[in-house]
Length: 294
Figure 1: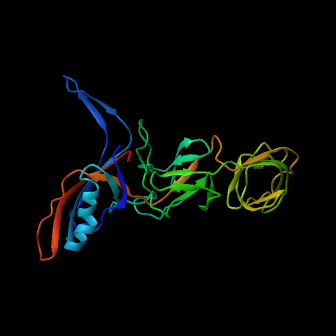
Figure 2: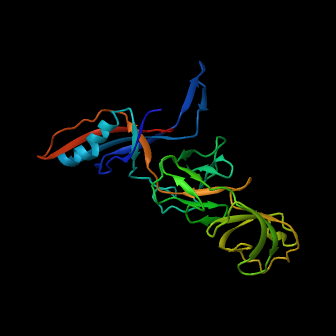
Figure 3: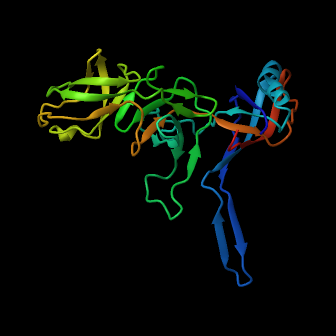
């Protein structure tokens, strides 16, 4: 695997630049004219044809030096697409519920993804998907099921060089009682690990107040013996016995995420620098190609 530069190439592009997505399709034609088509993978690969007009100083700092550090076509780097940079449509503000992530390791690691065409029914091959390997720092949002959690060391984290969301060690406890309240209070014992305000917990195995089973709720406040959650249980049955809580995503739960993102790309051409107005340099038809596994 080649090097990758965690920097974004200049997005001061000229009108007339364009992009296109390619899919890896293997087509075999028979003697009778029939086609056999095989989709090798569902991931689009974006190609950019971009042109620049930069003053000589910016030419060197924002383009030529990137090309040099990348050793031409060898190393990858980040590029912002002028038409698409969000998981919420092409340019919408990201939300924690934009798309389901890919489970890498149950409970601890999840890969950000973006699906396309989900406003209509998918064909037999399913929806095309872009694995988001280069999210923009400070834009990632995350939820487990229906519960969004603010990012902190106690809730979740994201590696912006890989697009993988990680969760800290699981906190679990045995439930001894649950109140009927607008913000339910759970009495617990046998704590393993840690549970913090701002995390969310999955509640399972409860007797009596069965409506609460398999619900996840945001933790509002924690003491040595009680957890207050943002869940209204006033209409639930009375708690009788049993149950437990877990902080990490459990089997059957979906982790969602959204973010702004860059495309991991490499040069697929040389850097043709011309001369136009004094002090300005046109750079025409620079070819960039997306890297699926940077």
